[in-house]
Image (cartoon, rainbow, N blue to C red; front, side, top):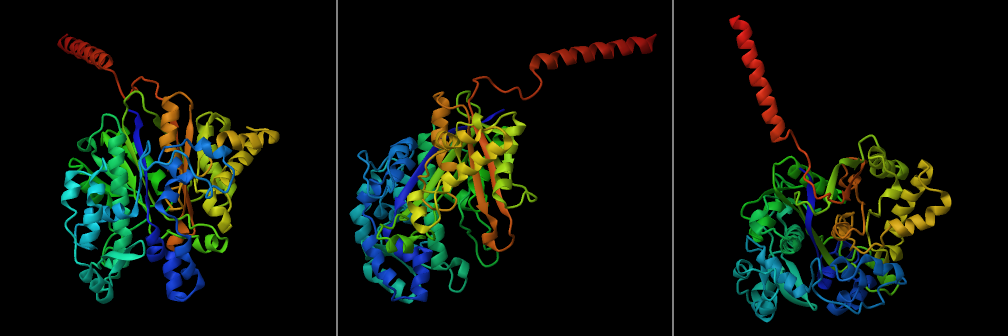
Length: 513
């Protein structure tokens, strides 16, 4: 049985105050140089919700504009406003900070998130209007605390601040007095990841035709955070905690990690489980990272740009049994960065791109679009990191020339035709291949495209356990509308039984004679 992509969602939460309070670049600066000019300038460079909403890459991410709109949009993009700037898109939404804080309270099981009661009262009704916010979620919100209690927790109990419009409106308490793995700093990272994943999963269920919460049997979380205590600091399980809030009562789940490559690994794992018949429907989901908020903020501020890394991202991909129409995940031709591959760019692309294509009897021209690391160049280029998606396509093009699949003079056109402009927030795992799965699904179903390759790559050396690189790729292909032959047909079985009975009867006659 084939595994297919049945639905997707992509969500963002605009969290400007968390840039200053929780982004690692800013929190480190407060430790090293608390009176720095950079920290003083950050508030002046934070975007309003309206500006973040009207930012073209954000609107592309949630599905209100096709990625092709960026092809004709001169860079930089931050100074241009999308005319069709809406909160809700085809794939998901851009949630404002105040409502995201309420969602953080909703997902909190240990009374760690404390919100000002006046703050909850002000935004509670608006939060309830969101179509993904259930009565079950609203019942978990509570009434809130007095402002004085929250101030005491911050000043005396090492709680992390929750600021809104530069005003203290809540905090995250530590979950243990001395365990650093349950400190307020770690808990806010994990709760933000969980809350954004819950939003993505709820939208994923809503977006997927014929799927309800009770139909999902397995959840795989593939974010970059780790939950646990001193005895098992990365034990997990994000997946089940996320499914619990969206009330996936028939689901179990587990976490998959491989830095930025994690989502692609998780999709291949989910597709394999479905193809093997273990589960009928699997949700692959990931929330975002507070640590990466304002990651390149120093470069943006130095160049008088807004801090564009003010978005927490999330996504969900629903993978299920063949419905005879949704795109198939081609598990027969997976690209794998093996332990022996090495880290040279050409070796990486050979393992992830040319090897699986060769095994399928294809060339790079047979793939309509490649979705490698989809980081937004509006963010990375001012920081000196270049245009990452374009660099990947250039490498694929150069490899194509080397393989004899492409003439050198065709290279510029190949990059334009087969590449995608980056539009995903720099949230580590979020940009790595998966942002285009939703668009790929639609384009393949409509017949506009025949084959799309999703490429996930990861930097394992960041964990200081290995210098190895990582990567995995898979292709989405059209559904033929015919069920895959997974075994022997009933007619064949009947024929084999009949033949066996005849042979058995014949042997009895022989013995009797």
